[in-house]
Length: 605
Image (cartoon, rainbow, N blue to C red):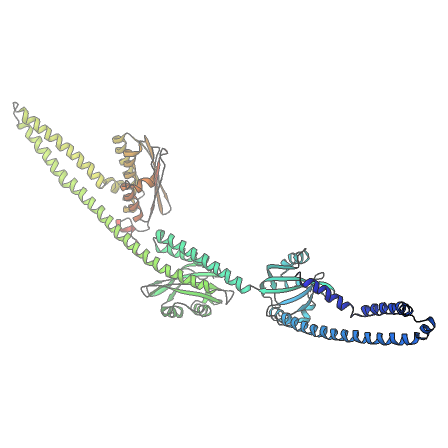
């Protein structure tokens, strides 16, 4: 740049003498020099004044001739320079046409004061839909949404440098499409007025893809979170169905409605719905011969418009569908269900990433469905084992009471009958008989206590509340611990037998733990029946413990068995305790609607 600057100065000086003002100034200077110097030089050369006067005409002719020659040379140089400038101007205009008119990116020039378009290129005309004459009647605010115009005007008139990059901005096309653009601008002078040259980069598609990628990543993260949660917590089909529909609403926000169809024998039944027509109720069934079902038996995906048409043909309430994502749920190559995300507004409502997310969710649902079924089978088997265990305890208790108890009673009677036969001098024999009778009494009491532990007969006779009252009475006598029982249900109310047994065992185990570990003087036991759930709470103000540490150390066999027994009924156990702050055990047991029998709590899938 330092070398080029003197060259520019010399070029400007040379061009000045080719301009009319420069030529006139040069002619004026040469003329003055000729007038004042020519006579003086001739006199110095010895020419006398008379001769000098005679030579004035010749001197004038010489001056005019030299002037004409000089002017001719200058005009030739000026003409050549003009031709060169004209050529460069044409080349510049050609470059302008190439860089501006034929630029593949939209460009325009606007007046900095009025913000009116001064020139636009072909790419701008093609992108925005306005012709060049229409552009010239508009300002740059006319292609902006109404709410963006104050910010655009403030940005346009704000102090700025020669070059500026800004965006993203929102532009409107003639047909109402919304574009996202980035702008590079340069301050220029246009026909003597300050103007701005603008180069537009349409980033609508780039930003759309970036947003879709972000949503896809967010959807995958949500799926991962849901899979972790459901893998550990989903233990029944109904909850799984609710969670699936809720997840679809989150990962496919474009959907107006979400429908979940599940196979039930020879039909597909609508089991869950979120949104959609009110007349389409859960329980609506599709035959296996329905077009939608037939198509999804053999393929994994449908075109959104085709899926909408097939649903509309099968379900009259969906006749206004515009687009739908329908993906199958398969287990072992068997179609078990269909997840539908429906749009009633747009045929292009769904992005490709949403279909991919829905297919991933369907694959996850297939695994979860199998897990839930296996879990329910395991629960049924465990319940049957528990029922068999209780039946065996009942049988053993009955045999101990009826057979062993009867034998002990007979032995006691025989010993009693033998006592009068003992002679007075047989003190040792009399003492042995008395000790035997005392041992039989103690054994009878132990068997009676064991019978109560195996199967409390009062549970069958008095129900849960009566049996607990009897047990708590014995417990207080044996331990000296005061127990406050609050039962928010009538003693005559009977619950399913397995529920009563589980509740009884829970209170029994909890009170046993209090006596062994809590060092408490009193305990509170609460029973509360709400709707179809029984809530039991056992709370003490003893020394407390750290549940996590106890479970980690493997010193919680009683608590673990208690939790397993409660969960077999579909309930849950909560343990709230801290060292020095007492302990609260809460058990929530669902009450089935079936009859009061041991098998009443079994649930079939």
